[in-house]
Amino acid sequence: MALHVYLSPHLDDAVFSCGGLMARQTANDEGVTVVTVCAGDTPVGELTAFAVELHRRWGGAGSPIAARRAEDRMACGRLGASAFHLEVPDAVYRWSHAEPLYPDEGAIFGSLHPADEELVAKLAALLEDKCPPQARLYCPSVIGGNVDHRLTRMAAERLGRSLWYYQDMPYAARGGVIPADLPLPTGITMTIPLAEEEVQQWINAIGEYRSQLSTFWGSEDALYRELTETLEQAGGLRFLRPAGGERGVENP
Image (tube, rainbow, N blue to C red; front, side):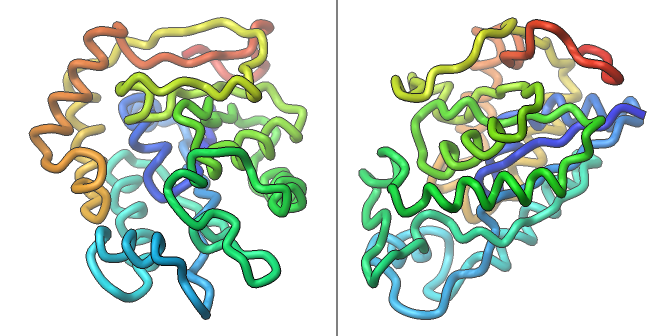
């Protein structure tokens, strides 16, 4: 049986970006696992004003992470995928020497903080343990430049595996670009058309992320319009895949 492992920086990114293909793969009795990197609990202690504002936006004053993990399990379940959550804290919770590494939204979409370089190595070791060698591994292209997307891709590239790079949604649909300091490797761009029922399954899965809809789309109608228009313009889902192909996994 073919195996597919999607690396998701946050508790939504892989489903936001690839849910339609996941639906197809599980319908074909292929194994799909979503490994979310930044799914750790909110650390005890002081929060930045930015983190407090995100909590308010996500639906409450307390830590939202348990609820977001539940949303992710429901979304993955709708697609027939398994969900696995690592314990790395989101960038908004990472501090060093009593100072936040990413104190505001501008920092979140900037360069990886030098204090996180050690975390890249630790994450690569975790992924080596959690990603079967026979599985096809998907990772973000880092369209939009979010630091946790950078962290995920940089760790994945340390594995020395053939990677499929997915387009980070919704940033790809809104004119986002890949950071100049993190160009993609040489590969083949693939466009995978989706059937109407696969698109609907994808939209239904995204709808499980109730805490995030207001941040990214405002309504399910807005989600439907952006997703369907993006797919129509692109002709399907786009990936950069290894030029040499892979053993043991058929395309797409």
